[in-house]
Amino acid sequence: MPQNAEPRPAEPSVARANEEVLRRFPFDDTQDLEDARRGFMGTARESVVQDAAGHTVWDLGAYGFLAQDCPATANPSLWRQSRLCSDHGLFEVTEGIYQVRGFDLSNMTIVEGERGILVIDPLICAETAAAALALYRAHRGARPVTGVLYTHSHADHFGGVHGVVSDEEVAAGVPVLAPHGFLEHAVSENVYAGTAMNRRAAYMYGAALPKGPRGQIGAGLGQTTSTGTAGLIPPTVHITRTGQTETVDGIRMVFQLTPGTEAPAELNLHFPDHSALCMAENATHNLHNLLTLRGAEVRDPRVWAAYLTEAVDLFTDRTDVAFASHHWPTWGRERVIAFLTGQRDLYAYLHDQTLRLLNQGLTGPEIAERVTLPPALERAWHTHGYYGSVSHNTKAVYQRYLGWFDGNPAHLWEHPPVEAARRYVEFMGGTDELLRRARQSYADGDYRWVAQVVHHAVFADPDNAEARTLQADALEQLGYGSENGTWRNFYLMGAYELRHGPVATPTSTVSPDLLAALTLGQLLDSLAIRVDGPRSWDADITIRWKLTDGDADGDPLTLRLRNGVLTHVTGTGPAAAGDPDAEFTLTEATLRAVLLGTLPPADLPSHEGVRVTGDPTRLTELLGHLDTPDPDFPIVTP
Image 1 (cartoon, rainbow, N blue to C red):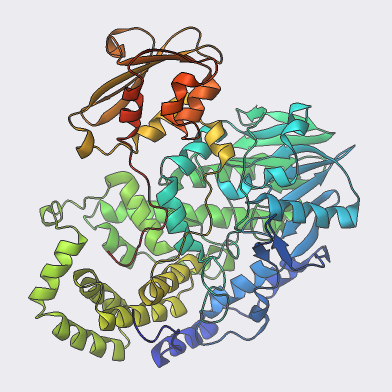
Image 2 (cartoon, helix red, strand yellow; image 1 turned 60 degrees about the horizontal axis):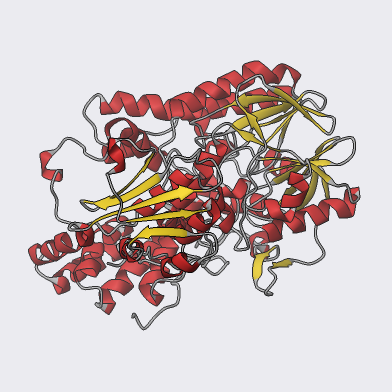
């Protein structure tokens, strides 16, 4: 490891670039500051939110340093955004509608009904959600939760549900509303690729970084992710069409479905009795992601823009305030229309210009260097790339239409990173010569090139302390200059890994509730993803399950591992693979326990209510072909 593990100060070239930002944009515009503090009612007395074991999952005071003037180690525009996002407390949006902001990455919105309250988007974890609800009740009284609404299928909008309502209360009639497809996308996103997404999210949000002027200062969309207990209560009321109306505890709502925008399953909703419009995460005070850096399905900016136009047409003639699940509200009908149409133009412009340029033959990286926003959009603070960016969003549009391959056959069969790095270093004259030249580039302020080229030295020789130090220094300077919160966090987390080694992933959204919400088909798909293909090439194992309860309808479920592929078939048709090696008759709960690893397969034959024919050891053999994901894999080192 490098001997000097401390962050460096900003280099003069970075400091000058950050000073130029102050001259370029209207920092004397205080409208966002006024909006972010409007309706403030108070905040929690205790600044630290802890879990049952006494571990801190959220610290309201962690960002107090943002009250200082922006230092040279931060982009002033991002510093401004982070200061706005770090304001915490209970805020009145309009009569009967309140938000708790600054208690997690997202906001929790509370709408008062006839008997109790509707909670919208209960944060990431139960601990922060409970703290937010307690703050509301301290100011507005101990009203019961009479409804919960998830605006979309990302974990920061449902994970804290157990902090506001229990499974028993939902079973007794408290409704949980969500858009059509919510459960499918919530569980598949967090389980199928959950390990890799959570690992990359650790870099994207920088939750493990020290908070401070040389460390984590925010993520643009909010400050960071809480690290408490995430859960899920499945929805009981599904919103299936635009124009659908629902009334919960006297609260009238009109819905707009917006699938394929910020999430695969998402909705906006209007409160006609309050003249208030909830835009979920479809219109926030920044440029959002078309492809988040943690990884996700590429979003469609064309339909995103179209749904924003539709929202303007459907709701704004009866809207006095618009609010979202992040950031602060916008008041006044004309301002709401200007905000929504500006957001609409932002996504439409990125989509259309990327398509124009790719049809001229430009590749994703070339388009990212070419596209800049129109001056009218760039002047608006809410279009700035604090979370998404013009650079990686245009690449996402390219990927959506054309995929990873840019058409150049030279890129069709490149060497993987480590092998390519060794060859690059050799071609450059060896590590010493590469580092000599890279140090000069660093002195010239070309940190972008240093990061690109020294990456090869690190991958060719990961134990080279000089290469790791220089790469960390370059990434750090790139982070100091970044307006984008997630770029800054990735850069600084990369520097941290190079200096200290990989740190553990602080947050996992793969909770027991999510696993319980998987259908049997999704659960078996999640196992198929873990099959070690090469180790399973010669295996041919068939296991049949007969369920005595659930939705089986008497049809057996056949699981077969063959050709390194784990398939599952319901029924007795030709695809069911003939006679099994072992057959188990059992309940669905017992089957789930085996598949989730809480019941060892060797214990299954003696388990109560289980009948077995054939060779039960074949099940143990089959499950032995599953690989185990690594939740803490390195990212900037091989």
